[in-house]
Amino acid sequence: MKTLKFAVLPGDYIGPEVMSVALDVLKAATEPAGITLDYTEAHVGGAGIDNEGKALPESTIKICEEADAILFGSIGGPKWENLPPAEQPERAALLPIRKHFNLFANLRPGLLYKELTDASPLKTERIPEGIDMVCVRELTGGIYFGPKRTETLPDGDIQATDEMVYKKSEIERILDVAIASAKARSGKICSVDKANVLTTSVLWRKTATEYVAKHAPEIELSHMYVDNAAMQMARDPNQFDVIVTENMFGDIISDEMGIVCGSLGMLSSASLGTGKNKYDLPFGLYEPSGGTAPDIAGKGIANPCAQILSAALMLRYSFGENEIAEKIEKAVKQAVMDGFRTGDISFGKPSIGTKEMAAAIIERL
Ligand code: NAD
Ligand code: IPM
Ligand code: MN
Image 1 (cartoon, rainbow, N blue to C red):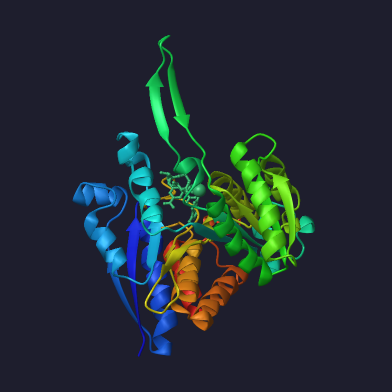
Image 2: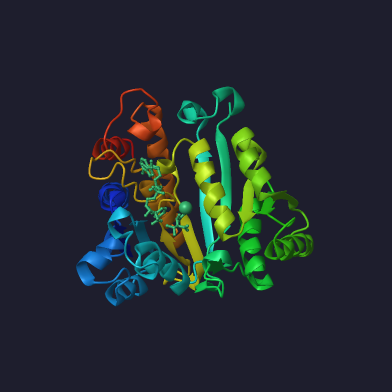
């Protein structure tokens, strides 16, 4: 009998709501295969601050280190926004946990089934076949992690600085992930940058061109400026297959991809690094791409699909349970096709709550 050992970090606002039902789905999907879930819950983010005095308690890191993967909710929100910036959940927990485990590759699958195009704000005529792409976002470099400072200038003005920094080696390793992804898909990569302005982007573009030509000449590589890419994503998302981009551009482009694919509530993600677990598979952190949705928290109406699909990605990448992952993905698709929709994807049609959505998915496993 196989036991899956993972850490569960539900986080804040809708985090615990969607995590609780995602665990129900995981249990229902793995039990018939004789798989046992051995998970330990830990506080992170605002929950860490409120319960243990800090956003990323040592005990939480220890639980993650002892596990083979991390299933993460989302963290942050108005309750902690007045804390000093360095103590806020996002800065004090999410970025450090990504850095601690060296989770440099964030894969965000943008998937809209052909049968569900009415869930996208784009007109069905524009996307008759649905959407299928993946955004490969660099996650531990760039402006998020470069030097930061705020200073008072001699004339009394105040100046704040965030530096965007990239090493060639950091660009190459994320390209490797994009290349592997493209090889399993259409063989096309679009690298998104701002090489007409930023020095880091000049290095990014040069590195991408040389690296792909040398290591994967069969890949069709194109380049696009990020402003154009944002526009193209709304105009014709299907021109993209694999997008590779730096940290902040990937953050922004992937939220846009999320909405053209129906809702942020459907957008899962896998953050993978160099570390391996006891199965010799990538140690990863799996989380919805969206946030804690404070505007709808506590009402039981959040879309749990992103969390459930993130759990499926955990099964696939960190535990090698491809069949069960696929079973979950198919059940999610079937439930939405059968008309079970939370408010974010119902577009005026009757909607259901988080628990009902999960129950409909479990019934279809
Ligand atoms: P958000 O993603 O939380 O919400 C944006 C909009 O999308 C809201 O209208 C929300 O209701 C909707 N939405 C998001 N997820 C949904 C779901 N599962 N079901 C239905 N609707 C959903 O972004 P925000 O409002 O800018 O951020 C809120 C907080 O979340 C902030 O503190 C932010 O820093 C944090 N955040 C955390 C993570 C993370 O932990 N990974 C990611 C993004 C944002
Ligand atoms: C995401 C989030 C985070 C990011 C924030 C909360 C730090 O927006 O995972 O997309 O910007 O990476
Ligand atoms: Mn984001």
